[in-house]
Length: 303
Image (spheres, rainbow, N blue to C red):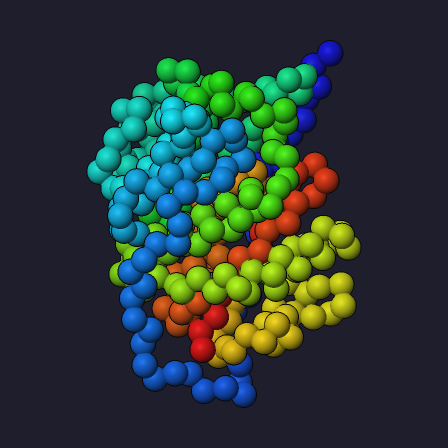
């Protein structure tokens, strides 16, 4: 018997994304500008598939990933403007994808469950589309803030995609770290190509964000205000973070950091946080529901 479900990622793209930003009125901003962070966070990241992402580019400006399993390339992610993947150039228009490939997939099937795909946000805007091309599941992400250009492309070969038993992967500490670290690199890529300095990864503060993600799951809420009435600035203060400007993005429903990041970049408030010039530091906390769905808390601040 074939069960049918709506893919959680599509239900959560806009409804499950929230942001806030403010400053600490009791602290003065630094006058000096943080020096550009040259080193990237890590060379590889555990993914939600049976593979690891490996960074190809040597800097943030030309960010791309190769997915490898047992030394075999089984996936990829491209963001570099002008590069072409499956005949579609990064920077092309959504119409080019529609003209070449037509209608996207209606569903992806994992074992006895069919996950229905919806590519629109809560306002009816098409944010991405997934196709089955040459034995790969290929997703084209569109930029709603730049005339619907193709902003990035991810592809996973069919065997790797369908090796998952469900829409989400089995939670692990390695996967959590991989999702957190990759989110930082994705955000820093966006900042650099927009002429901003990359954020310093305050990885030691990740447990602060993880706790909020865990609280959202445990106490069944989705908000910047937690079950005790505390907000993001309260959590930073309690965690000993010395800040002036602060902000927070949260997300849930997306099955990995690439899909979550692409959704955040298509949401105006979250995009503003990601590209806010005042921010100098970042930390990220991921926790998983029992079904493997990750909850993200992304904290930004400047000292």
